[in-house]
Image 1 (cartoon, rainbow, N blue to C red):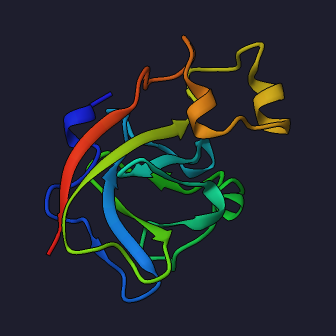
Image 2 (image 1 turned 90 degrees about the horizontal axis):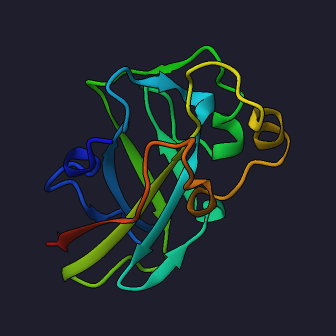
Length: 147
């Protein structure tokens, strides 16, 4: 993983009164097919924001849920591109510094593994995808600011 580059510096901001948003980078040097991106584990200042509160925008298409992204089997997220992650948080976050913890839930794309069918049928939550079969092995933390 290229953890230092997962969150684009300076992109963390409120999204009107709906919540907040920031740009994320794919954690694989080759990029990946969108259907392999199963969401994010996100916490800000110790508050968790589950998948149901997240939407993902990439490739010039409007923000989509991760259920919709799971069907994008032929759409690719190129390594050079940032995606925007929208997080529902009524009223947004307060101005000032915040501590962002993030885990990217992406399945490995190096051929079929014995666990793959189970992960397709019953996809673990991003935080539970940590294993020897995934790129990210721990939570990454970023100091961000709402201006």
